[in-house]
Length: 55
Image (cartoon, rainbow, N blue to C red; front, side):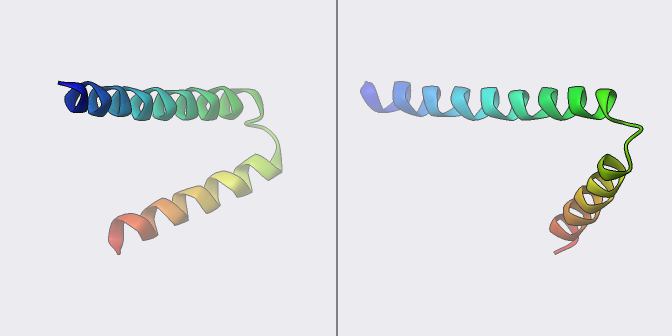
């Protein structure tokens, strides 16, 4: 009975971490959208995600 509960908490922690990262990225994007560094970072992130999806 302990193993499914532990796996369930592991999944919950992964979802919480992903949501935290997404919300932080959204706030960062909305706050610093006009800075050139953020534009370069977003372009790099898009390229990185596209490479991960393609390969």
